[in-house]
Amino acid sequence: MTIIYYLLFILLMLVMIVGLYEASKIFWAPDFDLKKIKLNYEILGSGSQKVLLLHGMAGTLDYWNRGDLERDKTHSYFTVDLLGFGKSPKPKSSYNYYEHISAIEKIVIKEKLNDGSTLVLGHSMGALLALALVSKNPKWYKGLTLISIPLFSNRDEIIEFHRNGSLFDKLSVGEYGIYFCMLHPIYFTEIFRPKELPRDVFQNASKHTWFSFDRSFKNIILNSGNDEFANKLKDKKILFIHGDRDTSAPYSKALKFSQSFDNSSLLTIKDGDHQIYLTNHEQIWKAFSNYFDVS
Image (tube, rainbow, N blue to C red; front, side, top):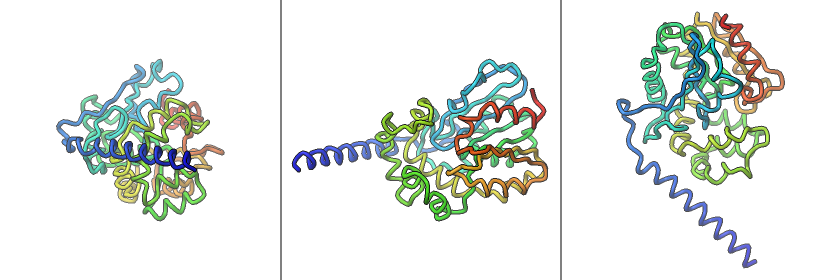
């Protein structure tokens, strides 16, 4: 019993140290200042068709680096680390739509992605941000692709949807998810990596703070404003891509939402989960090219 108590004491101390360390990051972080914010981004490919790529919650720009995007001579892919994730700044911030979108638009303007020919593609939370980005200035962009878009009205709804999900999902979206997130340096270690998740994606998933995760979850995923966005994009060409076995974002809601637009299409990935881009990227890029008539 003495050994067990000793091990429990060590575990408790580890949790406390990690929690205090993560809290200190926020204490010392600067406040959000749009003038000083410079998101990290990279450009893959050398083609004329510009594509802006926005990753999902706890992702980074490396999420998109599957296949041969770097060698693509028909597209130029602008991959972005969203505010609070990857190598981008992680300020004390609300991480709401205004702050996320304003930070992304600095890249859009700098790289002249606002000329009406750019295609925007987002995954999960990145799909919500892509939707908001294009709805703000529809004439800036040619079209929109939304992969695994999460559509929830409130926390109770998302908790109910994840009732039969993994323990990780339940803890992440629950009422005390913020405390679970503070301990992410512990559980984002190799021993906890799901077999189906590539090592680089899993390791990059820890490149955020509990603050950027929690605030983005509350102010983006639980505050989508989808009806408002849909009204502004009735005629915009939109491709929805969703797995019919997505346990993180309801397929039924994506199906219904896709029917809100006059010029949209839904590609259903049979037996696909939330990470369909990782498993079906070739199929997704083919559908993307065909739908928007680019090759």
